[in-house]
Length: 206
Ligand SMILES: Cc1cc2nc3c(=O)[nH]c(=O)nc-3n(C[C@H](O)[C@H](O)[C@H](O)COP(=O)(O)O)c2cc1C
Image (cartoon, rainbow, N blue to C red; front, side, top):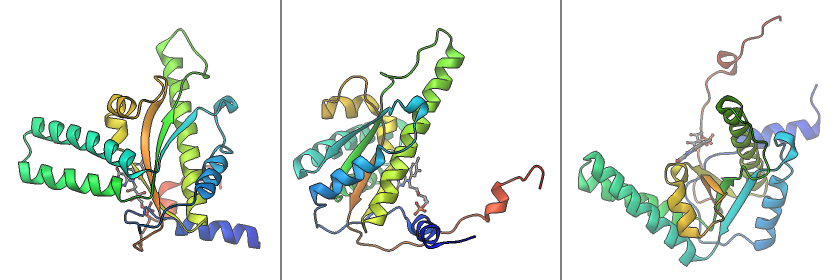
């Protein structure tokens, strides 16, 4: 039932973690290219490959994005009436997380090549398939990074401020930010648990 390839993959899948602290060491450009190319071998609805990746490696670009997102975070949380010191802690944490990564990959979707429907129900289904396809590519990228010894983490913040991210990074209008993958050489080790897998599974005829 098992063989070396399967064992290797299981080890890889179990060992991948959300890594949130990185060393200062850069990610070699050819390794970053390899991660991105491998991600594009993910499955996608109609094989339309609706993923788009905006990559930031320079300190100035990362800071620009982190600052813009921090300003919006501050404004949103102030409007919520949260205590100013808690807001500033959160803004500083977010800035450190974003700028502390060697590379950032803004994972976007594009509906440009997807099918169009006249009704909302099918349009929504097509959109969901697009999100699913992009999530698969993100997971491939994350696992490939882990296989290379890199750490990565998915930050959902861009999903809450897609227009801000598009404007700040001057992205094409059809690129819709879904999340931000931070990437770098790990400076922490994490352990995680999972709910027992049978609690998430129903065998209907076993
Ligand atoms: C869709 C999605 C959104 C996530 N958003 C965040 C986030 O905003 N900040 C964060 O620190 N981690 C985020 N994570 C990472 C999860 O917290 C992490 O994957 C989860 O706790 C399981 O830990 P593991 O990946 O180390 O197994 C996100 C993961 C996914 C899949």
